[in-house]
Length: 214
Image (cartoon, rainbow, N blue to C red; front, side, top):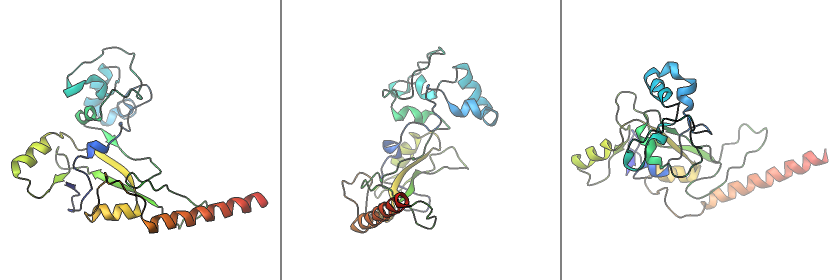
């Protein structure tokens, strides 16, 4: 199982199994990074500009066979036929969470307006970490019984450093990093998590009633 640079578990064997479409993908299937930050990445932006700024994933079919469209008519980002594995080829791929529920137990976040001291029920959980010194994955496969050859083969499948995050409730987050839980577990919210959420919901309802009455 993959682990953080500090050696704690991230709860998955392959972060890409839990990744989503790239954060830089626009609604019309173009690369937002190349469009807006081209000066910071000139070579990448030039390549994308030559393909009408089409997302790199749109130029790949299964097994990453190049099939550049060469057309300005780029398909929608909502197109489900693009596998997440296609994004592996892009050096700037990033998939960070914007979800409001735990991906493991389904606990929904409840925010209390104007209460800035209340700790969020959800936390951002990194499945992969950027490596600023090499072009490696930034993820170490430290599973028991993994030999050097297997590890090298695993790392060779992930050419670039990519940031991939998901949302976990505080309780699941702790269990995952303690190596006693996986993201794929079919579980209900922890009793303490459920109680905390219901307390916040009750408080939320009280504030709504108060505001309507005033």
